[in-house]
Length: 587
Image (cartoon, rainbow, N blue to C red; front, side, top):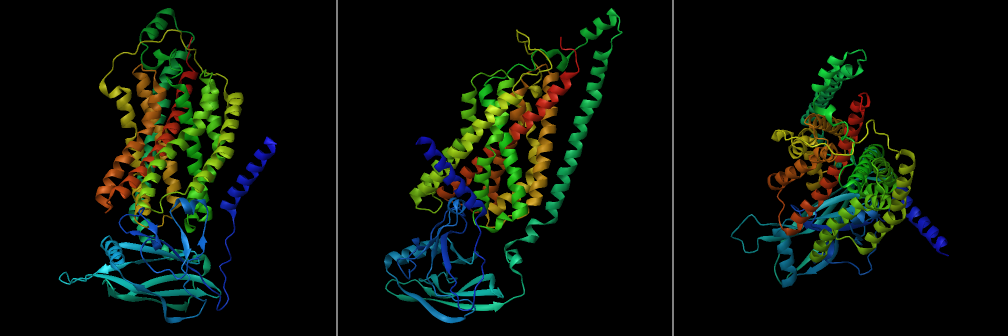
């Protein structure tokens, strides 16, 4: 009975995932006089993008108590959307000069709510045919001596452009402002005007894309600047490999040296060659390092996959499509983290592979869950739409438990059996070699902190565009730029970590594993420091709610970035270390 239930659960989850990613939208085609639904979504302070509430949390009049809700998928709910049918009568190609939505009676409580909303610059969001409309609740009267300086917009003018039987563009303007006075009754009205256009349906989302901002000359210059950094660093690494190491290899390759020359060469040995008996010694906290490297490898593949899907499928068009794709792809790529972790842990002599597997499968999800739990508690306390419903949390948990966790387990088993055999070029000596004192700039902590500067410099400009799109209502669509920057980040991170590892080994310090990881992961530290600057200089966010969400989400992002970069740096350094010790006489 138990296998049957488990199989049924897996089938349900699989169908759910497939429906989230590949579910077909309606054809968006209408006949004349067909009803067109106007969905109300959310309302909140304009300067605080995450502080959003249900549209009817403000005392707008509802035309009915049985209004339909539209659930657009996992990503839409996590993104804080709740679409409710406004029940405003709109028909395709039928103009409405002026019609009443309802009569709103203003009592003291309603006036106070509207005044607070206006003082905090509340905006709202509607959707029609999956196209967004925005507007402000009201405004402040320019005459400061006027007692009734708060005015509420009471008329909504909806302009709809269509091409044939499809809606191409929607726009909302508001007028007829009325002062907020207790005891007054205001008539909330709307009008609809339909205009024909030649714009095709495929291009209807272009109007929401800010081409001058994202395709500015500085964006192209940043790509060129990062590319030049890549050339410099790869040249530096090549010089180390081709010049410095070539001389060392030549000395070890001489077979006809006399005894005097050999003794002189041995006495002159220094740097990385002296630690060949310790360089492959298993690092401290091997379980944690293996889990971090495996998770980072998965995140690197995940980011690459999501960027490619965003380029091919224009995921920015759909509400929450990026979030849904990220969650599903994370679950499906869990095999990678298990494979990398299992192979690394087994090659380093680890025995407790089950502990390693469990830590790998749960490390990043539980870190995100911990941060998300705190933010969700804050959102629930404020009554915000940013609070993720319990049902959605359970869906995410089921995806992790029945897809991600089993794939991580399978990957660990395959990694142990296929790539877990120890194959180090040099044997590890029984007694660890003492590490001599070196200058301050060769200490692992300094090397780790300095290692993140150049990778951060390669993505600095792109971080500005990403932050601006996420926190300032811009649609990020230049995923081609993001792909180039991501590849540059990988190359720069590998090169910088290799150089740092080489300097560390030359200082006769063989604890390179954690240093190489932290050297690359420190990139996230500089991104987080930049986020603090961005918050105080580039935004007008305020309040405990928005501040906690800003720094909470940024922390979640930086943790993922740090693990990703750390894994890339470690794997690059591993290849480098194995390469330089492969051709020397370790015995």
